[in-house]
Image 1 (tube, rainbow, N blue to C red):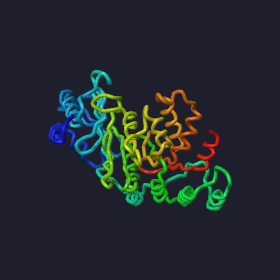
Image 2 (cartoon, rainbow, N blue to C red):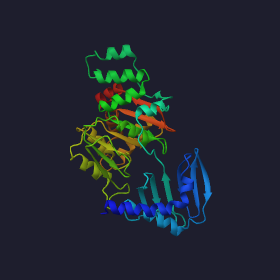
Image 3 (cartoon, one colour):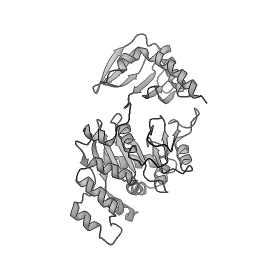
Image 4 (cartoon, rainbow, N blue to C red):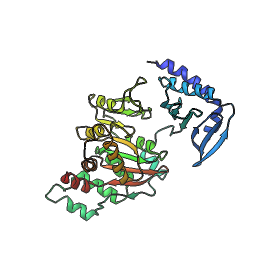
Amino acid sequence: MGTPVTKIDNSTTVRELMRPLEPILAPDSVTEIAINQPGEVWAMTNGEWVRHFIPMLTRQKLESLANAIAVFNGLALAPKLSLVMPDGQRAEVTLPPACVDDQLGLNIRKHAQRSFSLEELDTAGVFSRVADASFNKPDDAAIAALMDVADMTRLDDREAELLRLKADGRWREFLAAAVRYKRNIIVAGKTGSGKTTFARSLVGKIPTNERILTIEDVHEMILDGHPNKFHLLYNPSGSGQGRITAFSALMSCMRQSPDRILLAELRGNEAWEYVNSLNTGHPGSITTTHANSATHTYERTAMLVKNSDAGRDLGIEIIRQVLYTTLEVVVYMENRRVVEVFYDPLFSKKSKLAA
């Protein structure tokens, strides 16, 4: 296992090998670079891919760069690695036999150099065009009536408050309250939609006296304002490379007395156990996933559960019912804007009754 001194020294090697790429990566208009083969770089510039030719980027130099980034992360070079750069950017390395022999994949994606508060994102217009994707959208009178019904669909005070904030389009206040009340939140969207940045803004609303455990493949949840924290790292390709699986990290978290477990991305075999953890004394989680809409997030997560070792014997309808009653808030993002929010405690209660 490497020491902090080794990691600092290795960052020098990475920075030196990155010099030919810095002029392409540096502009604010560039959000990501992708290398498919020696001699060329594709840069996502103002939302479009632009090709650059760099003859000095030989295969040997690219392999040296990939190895240096892996060593900086305390890992040995492997055909598929998710890594972090010295300045915090995400890096994805793909080598043969995980790709064809004449290619070599290196993607480097920028992220916000600091966390933004919900208030800052609100001012920047993140909530300027949000649609309510919920099935039930009660007005104030209906909410009041639902607080007085004498059955399992009765709303409690917190549910009523959240519904009123949602109905009024007070999205920042709604989400801050959802975090405070330990609602389980999943931020969904396509690659590069701003999921991670937005999730970090939600994490900033967690009370600072809580114990937070995070599960990440690349360490991005810094949590400067939360002193009682512990970060677990997993290998998205499975065990090995000195790291555990996401499933093993989740099992470890549940034995370390967390107030909240924050999973950076829901995407694999850990899906069912993660959902179970939210129902066994660890609510208030915040995670991200890839999906095409707020409601599609439930279908996408259901398929992740169905494809997991623990979930493959469960019926898809049972899985859906559990998800509707567990993942309470879905935030769907496009182009770094929140475009849909799903919060429907009435539908959740009816799903629970149908289970």
